[in-house]
Length: 418
Image 1 (cartoon, one colour):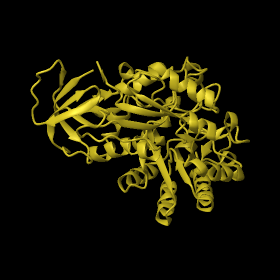
Image 2 (cartoon, one colour):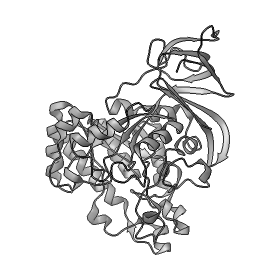
Image 3 (tube, one colour):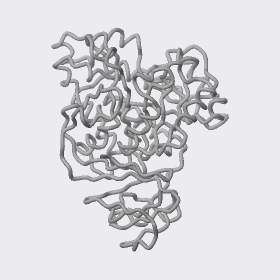
Image 4 (cartoon, one colour):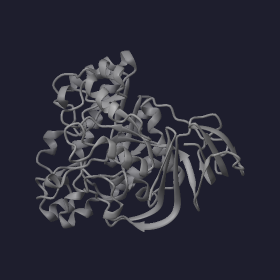
């Protein structure tokens, strides 16, 4: 689609037009012109909206869908449509489908299913076969097939030597290892953050220590092996401090935080609503503030929705038995704008591309148009009507939001909400 985006304020420090309100002319998917005003002497469609802002396309570093095998939770086609209408021009797909994505044929399958979509899909391959933590998966073959990283979603590698070998092996092809960090023995049967709230509610607790011990161990392993490690969805103040120290040492470590950990605390559990059962669990206000500080001082490299669709049969049940996870694509931007400044949000929603070695196109002439469109002043409440996913397990229902995603332009396609 050829288009002229009219009177949009560009939020992109890499653009020559950063903070300027301009027209953007896109022809055959390439930015042809940017100017204060562009006269439409062609067949280009025009798009205009009050309060329109644009930035580099957002990238989510942790999205689960369902297909193959769990299409009742989410399909790739609908999941990518949800991502597009949530402002994401790219997602990193976690391997926790059924079967687990742990070989090159499954990488080929998900990439083929995503072909011709506006939002680009970048598969993460399982680090170990069937994500069982016993033997390394076919890492090199998956890399050649298009995997951008390797990790077992929501599972910590108990065998430190196996993680060590994985970190050493992927260096031969500049691979990236994702190291979810949680000691399952310390977690035990815990279902909520260990603290005043879990004690008051009679829920088995998961101490911060369960995360922090493994973060520390994984950083020691990285220091020994070299290479690159990404620690997803940290949730505690001490984890932020440990990673901050590791970066000072010069280790090639990056990390992410989930939107819900920046916006919510374990106080949400008072009603035993399983929509708030996440992994890692929602923590305390002290942890939430430390995570926000980590975002602001760049200890935390990127923010993820950690979108994880769960069917109602596995979510709407007793708290102890319910699966962990919340959908988060649709609510990510509106929730973030209530706790962080706009420039930092855009930075943290785009930086993940560089971590996963994906080209990040700035909004400049002759570049590929990979653009997110949004407004910043709307205030509203997230309701069931705002859920686009097949699964409805959103922790953000009833949450106050600020700003709205309008859509994306990517791969020559304009996807607009409403």
